[in-house]
Length: 395
Ligand SMILES: *Cc1c(COP(=O)(O)O)cnc(C)c1O
Image (cartoon, rainbow, N blue to C red; front, side, top):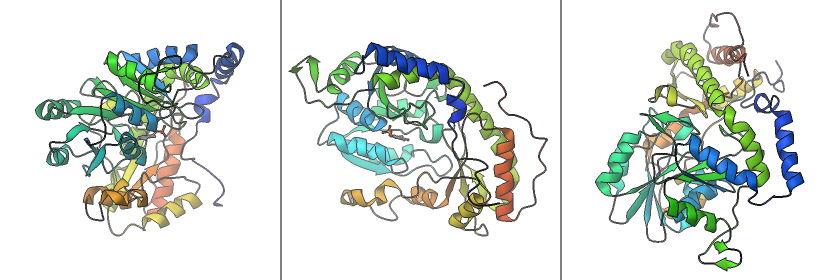
């Protein structure tokens, strides 16, 4: 098979967009006709709808997830001199959001089985200056709400969720976005709920925080041309909100499909544990929304990761690494003073992880193709699959 033939793409958004094409066209056309491009009707409507889905009162749409973190933290009162604890094992935007507030980021290691922030490490990192902790609900799995509540009350700290990969994720009866004082979401196109461009939102139960954000995202204006605080230009575009409104009612079903794909992977990959391939652990049952499906390649005897990825690519299977270089080892953040060896679990994961294709609408046949290619790449006999069938017949 030639290396240019894609058999299973890493992500395929066409399954989401094709059935909704007419509705999306109509929504975009509506914005064009009304001309309410900035903070138009769809923005407030989508803010209310998405906040309700998060089981909180307020949503404030911003330009992207990174701004949702930066502005959200500022609205919570985080500023220069404060320390904010976050995992080293996250997408760089979490760290960028903290740095933008002027606060000092304090990184901690992760749990090697789930890749989520290690809350024991958080406790050890707390000082008199610590104001907030950012649990990142990485890959679609929430950090334990009960542990976060306990941490918040024991140390009098603010919890600010980075839920950019966890739209509608649940754990212990709580939904992502409803646990912290506020939470940030991203609507980057490939997120579980994606726009057709950039977008983000802060959700919160706290009215003054929501008010402050509405002003902060709009040049710090309380009303036109009256600026009571330092603000920026970071609004969710009306056209993006209009598209997101069309897509939101389908989010639960899409997450369900991701979950089913993950169940199939889990079952089919069981025999590969003997070869050193371990899916990351799910501690939240059906509440995991599998933004990504990540395995650890944890044993000598496997081909090295780059060779394995290349072999899979030659078989038409696209994979990813989320993320190859941890935050604390990024050149831009050397000034924070961290180095190799500071966060051993994070560093080990960066070397070992591989993300397999995962998207709503992925068929069981595609899952089989991924697993069969993996078997070939590591010299295992071809698995004996049940007969191929469409995993998601009802779009
Ligand atoms: C995507 C993402 C962000 C940033 O969102 P953008 O919309 O791309 O700015 C922040 N944190 C995490 C964990 C993300 O995955």
